[in-house]
Length: 109
Image (cartoon, rainbow, N blue to C red):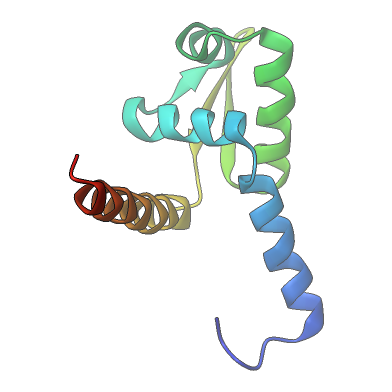
């Protein structure tokens, strides 16, 4: 993180991490990353949760500018609009995978 970030910007960074700090929102993002644009019903089906739950989390992601919404008739399709999400997921997931593999080697699994 750059040393000279003003305190106001740090609050925005913290908010971004809060938005990404929810397992359901991460599952939505992972699904969109792997499958591309989907509507709410398709996300509900893939995640095995309720429409209300998916819609609530999509509103948070939309408000944060992480996903975008495209209306088609009565349906709304969502896709990831922030390319940094892919990079961040790659970094975090890759690091966690390496840690788990290292721990497995230590215990002989």
